[in-house]
Structure formats: C-alpha cells, structure tokens
Image 1 (spheres, one colour):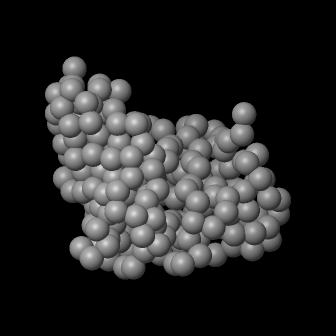
Image 2 (cartoon, each protein chain N blue to C red):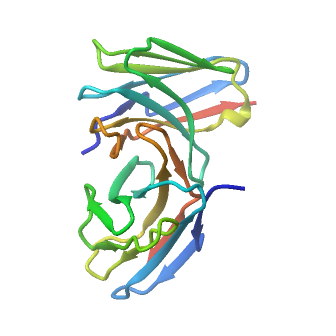
Length: 112
Length: 112
C-alpha cells in the first residue's frame, strides 16, 4: 500500500510565486526523497533528506523534514513555467532501502 | 551517457497475448525495479531485484513475471493473467544502499 501522501493533489500558481507541497508518511524512515515527473516521462530525483536532517537546499528547492510529525515539505521558490510537473515524495520501507514507496503526487501547474 | 533505456516507448497488444517490456541499464547498479503507474496516480511496485538471478514480488506482482539473468537487464512480462494491463510502466535502478532511484522514460502499454 502507498505510505506517502502528498498534499495538495493539484496546485496552480503564477510564474514567480513560490510553490509548497507537503508529504506525510506512516512508518519510521532513514531518509525521504523527492522526485519530479514531466508528463509522459520517467521520474527524476530532486533531493534526498536523511532522518537526522531538518532542512536541505538545492538551488531553488528547499526541503524540510519533521520526523515527529512524519511529514516533509518541498518548497520551490520563484517558480517558472518549466517547473510544471508532478512531484512525488518517496520513502524506503526497510532499513536496507531496497523498497521505495511513492505517494500519489502533487500536480503543479505554473502559469506564465 | 549512463542511464536506463526502456523500449519500446509505446506498445499495443490484443487481449490474451503476453508481452515483454525491455529495461537495460549501464549504470552498473545491482538493484532494479518495475513500477506501474495509472493515470493521475502514484507508482506501485511490481517486482524488484537486488542482485542477478534473484528477484522479489512487489505490491502488485500478480499477472506479471520477470527475470534477471544479467546485471544490465530486467525484462518484465505482462501475462494474459493480468486483468487490467493497460498502464504506464517504469523501470528504475539503484546503486548503493539508500541512494535514489534512476528511472527510464517508461513504456506505455495499451491492451485492447
């Protein structure tokens, strides 16, 4: 069963605005990963945050992790039309990290 | 360039026929995965393999089969026993422990 859940399911913003997506999970994790998927393509890894980290940055991306609330958020600052995509969080189901469980994703639309 | 190649991009089959989807990687990764994605939904794990000549069922393995005879290749067969095979199929690979997944660009299978 899917353990990660993204919120909102869909988000529509104007270019230049910030976009925030949230993810909740059910089990203990040693890391949480965010991926992006353009329509009809494979997923691309964006950022991995470990359980002992609270915040991580990569370019215009900022990810936070709150293990006490079992939640994570992805912030995209100064959004561009090219950021239009689906965004998924994923967490390993086991300590070995061999099985990764994905949420249902947030569909982000950035209007020019 | 290193990566994962899925072929073909589009595949059409008649109901009752088995069909095999190809997945090849040159990343020297030990682990490989097959996911299924239905419209507007997240990814569901079909099968995965952590090493050559070994594989495990995922969450929705019924009606599917795999083999892992070579490190580089992890073909997926969709059998006639799969009740609703029309979907987007994604192959992925992973290197070391708790590292992110690398995805191919998917095969869209339509069965009529």
